[in-house]
Amino acid sequence: MTPLSDRHRPPLFPRGPGIGLRAFLLIAIAIGLLVLQQRSAPLQAARQWAATALQPLIWAVGVPANIGDAWHRYVDRGNVLGENRQLREKQLILEAQLQKLAALEAENERLRGLLSSAVSLQQRVLVAEILTVSQDPYRHQIVLNKGSADGVYRGQALVDSFGVLGQVIEINPHNSVALLITDPNHGIPVEINRTGLQTIALGRGDGFGLSLPYLPGNADVKVGDLIVSSGLGGRFPAGYPVGEIHELRHNAGETFMEAIAYPSAHINQGRQALLVWSESSGEQLPSAEPAPAPAATPSSRKKARPHQ
Image 1 (cartoon, rainbow, N blue to C red):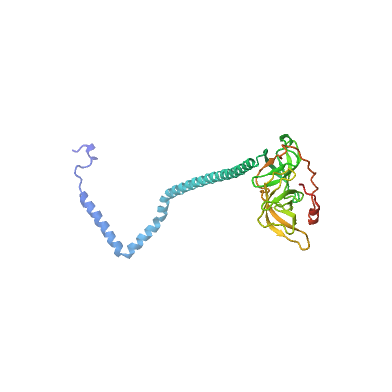
Image 2 (image 1 turned 60 degrees about the vertical axis):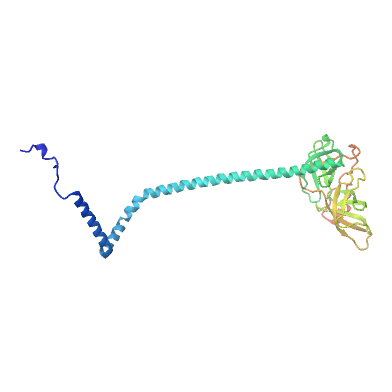
């Protein structure tokens, strides 16, 4: 009699076909299905139907992977946008620094030019900062950061590295006001550098022109002639560039002819200028009070008395 515990024990040698026979049958079935797939339209239709039916399942299986890819793309895009923002900010800072360096370089060039002018003048000079520029179109004035505490006096000449700028007309303890040579109330004794002909250069009031209205009709003056300060009166340094003639006007029936010149100095450009002491070792020369602002008419400009 067989013990009860042996009834549930699997047989040592199971009955039925072997593993090789079952594998052969599965391979045969797979080959048969492949052949039927190629030659049977109904099976092809069933396969398409099954693929369509399983499409949601395939999509659902791929959702986590798609979400992961989308998240990575979102994170990467956020990182790229952040890096681009940082790069733009750095670029803006570098561009601002570059502009500042360019401004400093230009200022250094102007200062070197002023120092070169000081050496060539062989006179006592003082570098002054230009604080403000007059906004009145008929009063060409600037305010300097040097005043009587620095030895500045009325009538003192003001130049830059290119030519005569003007003269001081008002002084305070720590600042002063200068009248530019383009002001209609300003005049400076000059001479034609080529011939030595002496005359007066007046400001035209347009901000960029000088007028030489008292030239003899037969004077030897040509377009392109350089006019320099004559030094008469001892206020402006002699031989310093004032302007260059670019137009000659012969008015019919008049004895004199007029020459129009462009100033050599860079009017309203730069932030520094040179205050030049006269040859009389700082003697304060008398200077007339500035005339009132002229009206916007040519006749009033002609009647205004220039500072010389």
